[in-house]
Amino acid sequence: MAYRKDSLWKTVDWWTIALYMVLIVCGWFSVCGASYDYGDPDFLNFTTRAGKQLMWIGCSLTLGFVLLMLEERLYDTYAYLIYGILLLLLFGTIFNPHEIKGSRSWIVLGPVSLQPAEFAKFATALALAKYMGEYTFSIERGRNMLVCLAIILIPMVLIVCQKETGSALVYLSFFLVLYREGMTGSILFAGVCAIIYFIVGIRFSNELMADGLTSLGEFAVLGLIILFSALLVKAYCKNSDRAVVYILSFGLGSMLLGWLFSLYVIPFDVVYLQGGVCAALCIYLVYLFLHERIRNYLYILVFTIGSVGFLFSADYVFNEVLEPHQQIRIKVLLGMEDDPTGAGYNVNQSKIAIGSGGFLGKGFLNGTQTKLKYVPEQDTDFIFCTVGEEKGFVGSTFVILLFASLIWRLIYLAERQSTRFGRVYGYSVLSIFFFHLFVNVGMVLGLTPVIGIPLPFFSYGGSSLWGFTILLFVFLRIDAARER
Image (cartoon, rainbow, N blue to C red; front, side):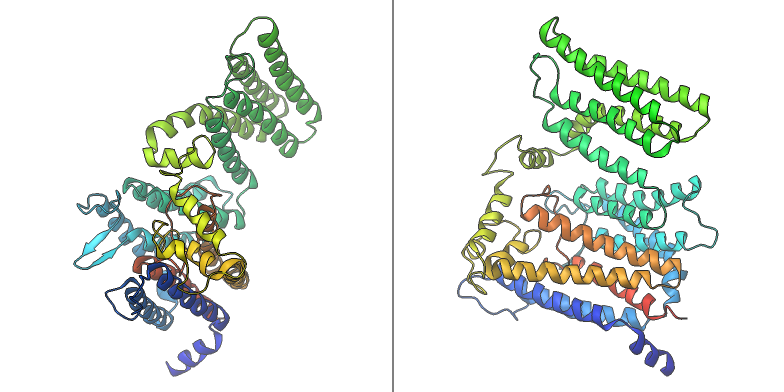
């Protein structure tokens, strides 16, 4: 036992622990700045936000130490059990009578409130690493890919049922792990296309072209579908130059001629013509498959049909599935509405706070926007605006560089793992951190939708801090035993 402990302290990655310590210290000072009231500087009082966060930090340090002391094989052995327990907690939370800010994602135990969704990320990462770490696993097998998708999507669906859409979207980061382990890039391409279809289709859905009948959003997306299908044929099918020319000339040519006919001869909705062109494209892809026996034509056929279906279902999802406040946030982000006192208030005030910080900032506890509570949720989801106001451009850049250093270090640790289990878990951890960093900072700057996810180690809250600590220190324990 003594030898094992001595070996652990020699092999554990102290650089990552140092970055963790610096981040939680910076995070605590940010919570102090965000929650500070004039005339009440007692940050060690456990009745204040700063005092409570200090208590969470102490518990997190203890938790990290305990995780390092546990045998690393426990995480592999009990991965499915941990995953199953968290799924039960997520399912039970759906029926939780306690609703906080419109969400049923919290378990209230007296004075303590815990959010299982924060811990489910760690459990999902373990289960995914366990399954993908099996000797017979191959991501090219359809069954294996479906199981991976199920491991990721089941907790995601349960969290959506808790009305916690922001936390559910974090699970999309696991697709970066699948890509690292050999998932074809066409799936990521399809995901990017879906985002483009949604943004363009929703943003310009109510704008008409010059003929007064054709929706600009639908016209543009259907044109992109034809273009993307041709690009996929070029990339994945051999000797397809003639087919690509036929698709582009017939598809895009028909669209252009139809629009000119509608504009100058007889006005009609060109989208109907585009639908016919897409149907003809599908028939042509079936013909190419039967003629050349190249299976990729069938995959491109599925992509084309799925893209058209996604376009015409996006409007239903936007209007019927998303909550009204989520619709408004997306509309404000896309420039469809200007709501500076409503849905856009948080982002506008956050921009003002960050901009007022200037190059060097106003100094610790001297931020006027945050002290006067102009920014809602300024110590949780919007805590980065406190960094920008008090520390300015220099401090904000320093914080982002700290996170970038942590992510770079995690990539290095993940790549040096001797087992697929360790590598998959490591990439899961860094993907989650990257997603949180990108979306949180992006929404504070008005670059991404406001979906309400915390900034790791900075946002106030015990569940968030414990969840990220567990994610990180389990990986550090696995990494410390990589040579065994």
